[in-house]
Length: 241
Image (tube, rainbow, N blue to C red; front, top):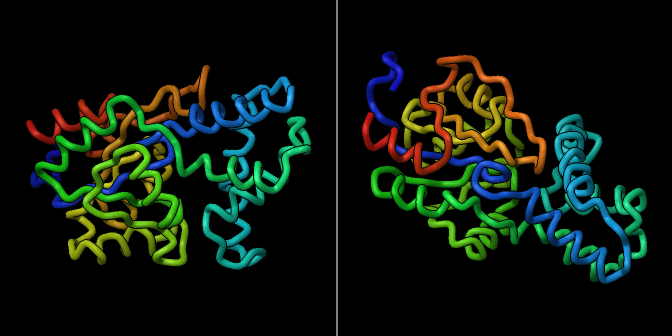
């Protein structure tokens, strides 16, 4: 534990896509299955990464006022419609596109996720803090067996991370000071934004987030309060500070 923060947080808020669930495998698997039904030889990994790459770009369009507030299901569908052609999937009809778009509701948890969350839940309130919309996160939790105490979505604040309203809004909803809330994420940029708003931080490594060949991001030694290999390791660290 960092020497300048001797007390444990009261609540843990988790980034979801990549940190809690394996979005790359989930999206690639469903896209490959759909492509096979149409006889398309799809590079499913490239398709998944292409879809994900449109996510921050679309959110920035909302921030700049080029698009009205749009939840993530809506942004995902907009991105999907823009990439199917270059991956040979422009023949997908409305029903198929709608079903594929909801693959983000059905993402599989990492193998360590549920066990680690259950251990952390014994000592802390655990919640999502995700840009995913409320219905997406709720359905995902049911599908993957995620044992949240509550679901907090950026949709509740009308702002996406890394806007301050998301981090401070989560602390407000949980009735804790920002310094008593810890963000758990595999994305250093998310953690840095949380820290700048007074939250505690835990970096969890996800070396396979973007599929084969993923490179872990640069993280300075001592930059975050905790650094863990997975959720089980984080539970070890939090149980034995």
